[in-house]
Amino acid sequence: TYVDSVLTWTGGLPVGASVVIRYSVTLHDPVAGNRILTNVVESPATGSTCPSGGNAPACTVYVSILLPHLSITQVADRTTVTAGAAVQYTVTLVNDGEAPYAAANLTNPLSGVLDDATYAGNAVATAGTVVYAAGTLTWTGGLAVGASVTIGYSVTTNLPAAGDRRLVNTVRSTSSGATCSIGDEEGCGTIVATWQSVIRRSHMLWWQWRRTMLIVKHELAQPDRPSSRRRR
Image (cartoon, rainbow, N blue to C red; front, side, top):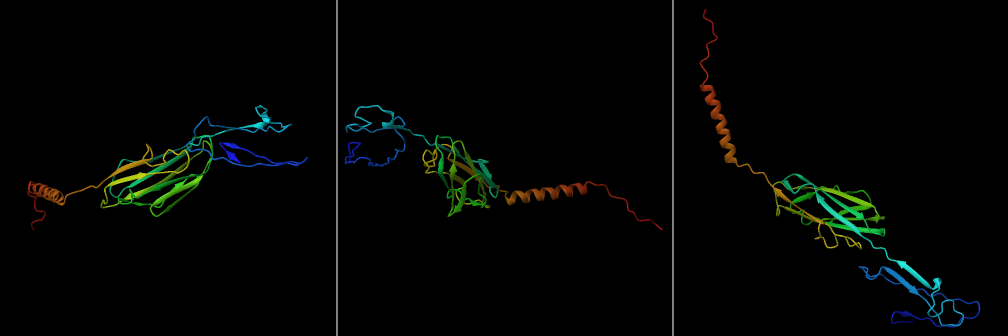
């Protein structure tokens, strides 16, 4: 039975018989307390090796809790871009915690980018698996303590410029201890402004007219050339 945080077992045991009791606990997330699970068993039965109030080492188990921590950053290779040019993105994940990740994850929705640009279809990761579907990049993979992975890809901005002319890009992770759990934390997003070069036609025509007039003026300023014909 389990009452008030205490498990209790009762039963008969003939000579030579044994009984095994199994149970589990799930850690709080985030972890609270002193990060040590201290578990003590005791029995008031005559001859017990774990008598009530005893301190025998075999009657107590200590389990240290290791804290996971996954540092995530996203950077773009520029803060402004001309319409029609490319922007390179790099996402880095580092396991700087105390426990390995069997299956860390990251999602990178591109909805704030694709109204102004086209994904180049070139995402690569140094470890794990990265896939693109329905406007979202997803990465999954294991990360040992101290290990890191880098994900790179690019987009090409529309020409002529369209959308809100802002490439708003964020990354998120549901892995325990991840720094980008929401996506609006520092280092989890980038904004690149899109600019379009504009050359007014009237300005171009003025320069063409100016160049023509300079040529004409130059020709008029030349002295008359002597005739090359010979008299017979």
